[in-house]
Image 1 (cartoon, helix red, strand yellow):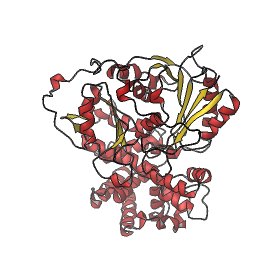
Image 2 (tube, one colour):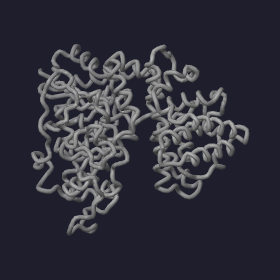
Image 3 (cartoon, helix red, strand yellow):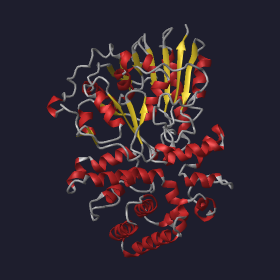
Image 4 (cartoon, one colour):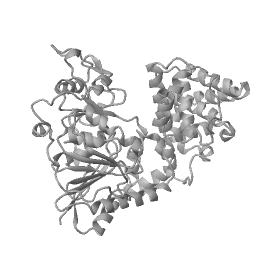
Amino acid sequence: MSKETKPGGLQLRGLPLNGRTAALRALLLVDQGMSAQQALAAVLDAPAARQEGAPLSGQDKALCTELVYGCLRTEIRLRFILSSVLSKPQGLPPAMRTVLALAVYGLLFQDKVPAHAVLHEAVDQVRRLFGQGLARVANGALRSLQRMGVEPLGQAFYVTKPKAKKGVAHGADADGFFGQCVFYSIPLWIGTLWRDAYGEQAALALMRRAFERPYSALRINPAHPCADALYAALAAGEETSPPCGYSLSSAVSPGTFEPIGGSLQEQRALVRPQSVHQQAEIKDISMSRLGEPCASDAVVGKSVPVKIEHWGLAFAPGQMPRAVLGHDLRHWQALGALSWQSAGSQTALLELGLDNWREPVWDACAGYGGKSMALMEWGVPVGLCTDRSAARLRGLPGQCALLNLPQPVCCLADAARPPVRAWHGHILVDAPCSGLGVLARRPDIRRREPQHLAELEGLQRSLLDALAEYLQPGRELAYITCTLNPAENEQAVAWLLKSHKNLRLVRQWQTSHEHSWLEGMYGAVLRNEG
């Protein structure tokens, strides 16, 4: 996979329409600058993609998604392996290297796909695109990989193969740390940042977590009439039948249901989690917010999900059921009964105690509104949502209607230049960040260069500085990132405290480095003491 691919530079019309070809198309779009999510949408959902032939089956779409995210998550390791079986991989066409990377991923990480099928399709794709000569090169390289057996699955392979180090990463050092970065497919600059900040053992734990397939999570809307039944069925980890007396005709339409037992505010005592112990030092993740079963390696591969307080559930890779109570999960989403939200995002809100806020909240970097929706479902009044991206913000009103939630004021604005004269409530800043805590979920972040960190750090401080001026005495500002980088996290908060003497650090939390799957989140709550 390479950035050399030019838009429109290669026609793939001669290839059969299937999951692997769709993944090739998507990865080439990523090479052109799209994010993985944008590329998959262009390949799987865009009208132009459907016009090329019969639409892909659900199975092919799932295969395409797995291949795209999997190849990006393991890209550095795949590139290292190709450098071991090819004499001059950089001299091959970029699209051919992508075909081979897809094949290497299939051979190493897709146990349910026959190796001969992976090899045959890759060689056939190269033959159709580049001719018989390069097809023989592809066949020879993949046969060489097969002869290696399980060797590429072990760390030693990446420490003892100096030939392949050239061109894999910049600044390779002589010790084994470079090999470990390659094994876990982490750019050396990220691995070095983590090692310098947290120590080598913590860095290795973070690299292991970033290499694994991510958990999936959802959040039940507690105001929906079927909330209790849905939660119980999903928490049991089984695709259950509808409960006795339930029928589709009795299910309410989106945006039309009334909260059970009164208003959302009246239900607050029923859905509000317990308060968080307040402390100023960083607190590793508390399992009080991630319920039974405990989040450990023991639950991986089992169907029982991990509970996130009262209404959230996290599922191990491949374990989220497709249907519950007789209907597809997307049916329940369309009825406003559940929403997709990462476990890390839900946990951060709860660990910081934002579910206890009672005054109006300004979500200053609202994005698509996921955190605002969660807070409103828990009874927290969100009064204003701003973001500088119209594409992200425009879906928020419809989502509120779907979930039958109050409609906050939405405003297209940069939080560094607030659109209000004054704000008398709390402020939530889900700041733009480097995303180093969500590399498993957003693997294309690995392609970014370290130079962008300084720009992000400046942006974060300008946001905090501007919004702190609007924080009234007695009110709180919550700062959240999905990265693990001290300069963007605790150092940014320390800078704000130094420049605003009226602020006091009330709570600070981040995901434990040793946690095996939860996204790497950081958060702090500061109060204006007047």
